[in-house]
Length: 142
Image (cartoon, rainbow, N blue to C red; front, side):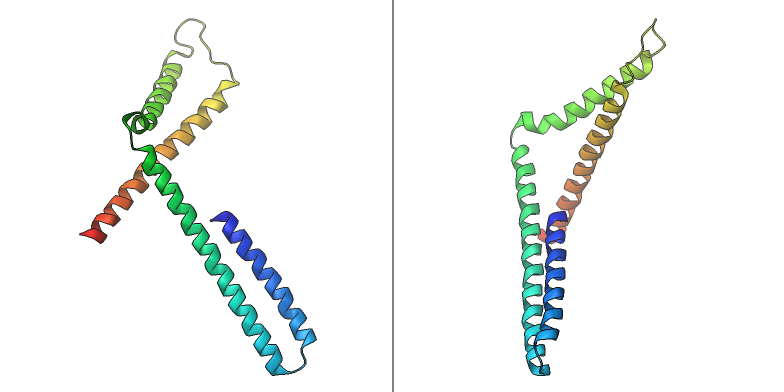
């Protein structure tokens, strides 16, 4: 919810600044209190709107993941990428220095490392989240 939190934080700063101006501008306590209440309502509305936007964003991501699982090819992309990267990594580890003069170019090591980390976290992390959501939905529906 990064951008939404940022926007809400900016709104808080603006409203706080306006509140200081109100304190300096209005002379009666009643006027000051009324203006501060209106600002509090605006601030609360901005936070609610940011939360709604974040929720809508998460729903759209979930819809995209569900649509990605609609056909056989899209369902198999993640497992095949993981399988390919682990096979490649295993081949490099087992053959590097063990078969003749084979050595992997040092420029490829960080790329392969980042790919392995990213794919592993994305694959197993997303599968874990999917399983938790299925369990929660099963509990909610059952």
